Length: 305
Length: 187
Image 1 (cartoon, one colour):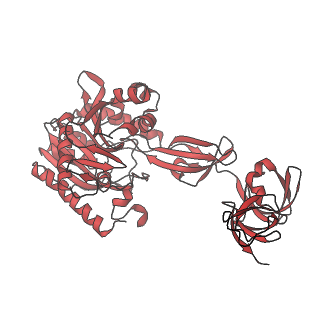
Image 2 (spheres, helix red, strand yellow):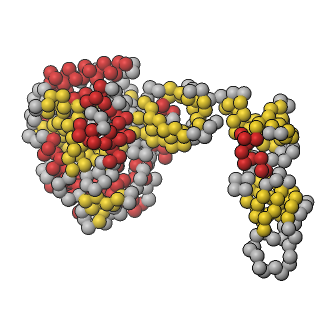
Image 3 (cartoon, one colour):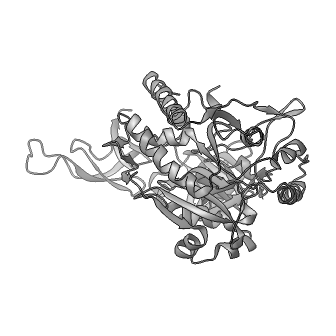
């Protein structure tokens, strides 16, 4: 549980995040957390709420707002994922999600750099922050100054695991290799963007021009910890439907029903090119406070209730 | 049966017909991918460590483990005989399997023995045991030349360092976790 001084830090941190986005002309939105239908994601398990569901992310509603013509949106909200309990997981956690129309995932990576740099200035008195531009955590110091490191998923798999990422997907061991061999190396000198994920792992992301087996998706790593997931949004409703069908097939193997999010697909047809990203606020705060467990930076962890 | 989501530090599971205890556990879920349950386990029979990563649909048998209170009866060669204090069943455990525990075993001592099925796999001694000193050099009062401890031997043959005032025939208390002298016991 948080001490009063860390509760105050948490408040300051959230205000600093908000300030960055407001200053950069984003609109803050607060969409419903309880929904009749979710985006089908085979590996994420939602909680029931009567006949509806608690959101696992605000993506569905935010994209529907973008389809109505909102150019820049951000949201700080609670998301719920069943069974996710661990040092870096809580079944209820705070997500920061933001979208920028007209951008692709490269633009978002640049904005991530600016965002964390400004956050470190705004939170320069936090335990991990030094000289307003470096973060200390777990006896390592990383510099937030641009440019950050960008490494392709394929390149990282070959370098750290001696194996092709495509092959790993075929052999159904992508996650095991990523977690055991690749992630531990990422983000110890500078933050790292791992990018260009195989299309099987980017259900809502746009295919990469010239490499259609890949999607324009990235994950941001600091100190070996995954902090954010961003991509150029897939706005082709037909292809999105086909990808959802594939997710439903995976879900059926685990006896999970699924319902096609029809209103979402209708709205998707009106959406322009957009890039969006979700960032784990609790994880980032944990690093800024030099803490080692998510539960150390939450007002209440699930097992304190 | 346990499923992967039941895994946690301290849980005992059965893998390839042997009991394991989980000594480290970490949940991870890269991106929007598979949940992974990463464990480090110790084989409760051999002591060997095993690092394994599981997925949510993996299942585990519960090992058939039971702890019984037993009394040490006697030793014969390399066989150490024990009796279950409630069922009066008798078993023996080899010297090799007992390891350092034999340093602290005396007749009639009650110990906890862990069984995996019918097989005794571990023995827990009381934390403190009282043993008689069978050999000690006499304490020369005023001797300031030596160190502040001296070596002695107790009834099990175990040797340890004790303060110089401990004499042959004394009973002393030993901490079985560290094998160290605690205090002299008055009877």
